[in-house]
Length: 197
Image (tube, rainbow, N blue to C red; front, side, top):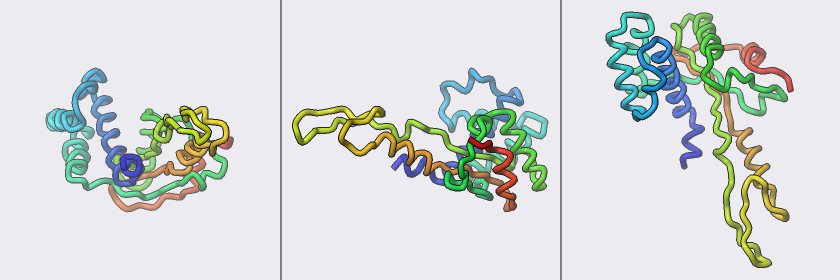
């Protein structure tokens, strides 16, 4: 079930918003990177919320008045664009899209500004969890004996490792979420976030 839930758009919206909250809190100096280690998600959100209330800045206001209350109330940003693996059509997602980078945040904020939204009200999500479909099974062979089926595969069986890789690639969906309904030009977005193979 976890695998199904992990890819659900609601979970992805919450994850993208949570990551943006933490990213902004660290970059605003509200938290150190060391403070990220140890607390649960709920403890971390509580501490960010507490500190944001005393921070007199746009970031503090967005965190305490908009993003954290939205996350807690499950009033999550909604999908305004989805790009499936099939739609990539030979294009490769640029490296900066795959991680929480300054370039990714700048892209999100530029889109937000173009769509007349506040900074952080657009979040981009492209889940990366390559190990999700990895295999490590013991297979009892009809001719006798037991063999381990892992990423290297087993001769004479369907190529499950390759199939798992294909399934992983096919099920990933790049999504752009926004707090308010907006429309984006998919081709223009694809030009900015991808390159040809």
